[in-house]
Length: 221
Image (cartoon, rainbow, N blue to C red; front, side, top):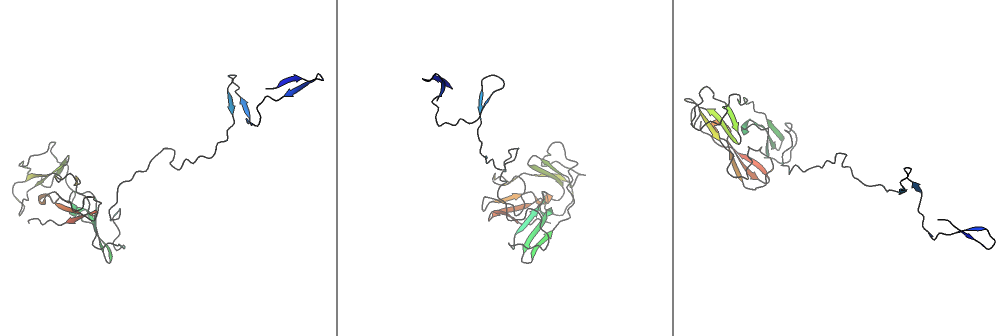
């Protein structure tokens, strides 16, 4: 504010308004006439990181097991002789691709199994004694229960075909579906049994040193 004071000589002289030592900086008057005042402010560089415009957050998929993420090439070097890794999701563990680490590198097997026939499944889960003549080889899943039509029951195949159904292991710490050999596991010493010899889905895996290790199950012939 500028105040005019009359000096003794009759001339107007400016008088300080009292705001001393404060640099208010440039001031802009709102052109809209609402009396608003905007002060210039210097904004420093903000470190906003590199999260991206979508705000996405990376999540940890969980610990990885000792096996490569994909089937390794035969002969490629490896550092854990004796380690067996399987790949895929066929309910028959023996039909999944398999790699074993040896002193000479990875050996690889890719079984040539016929695909499971899931085209003729009954709309409702069959009973344990229901017959299924003409449907041998059919494989059906009903939630966590798997049923297959077979005429191989503990000996030479033949005779009346019947449905054989299996459920996941009763221990809740076991995966609901057969894991791959070499996958990560947390419960050391835990053994989980899956499937049945009659359907070729038998598997037994034990958590050893943080990874699932498979054990062969002898089936009657």
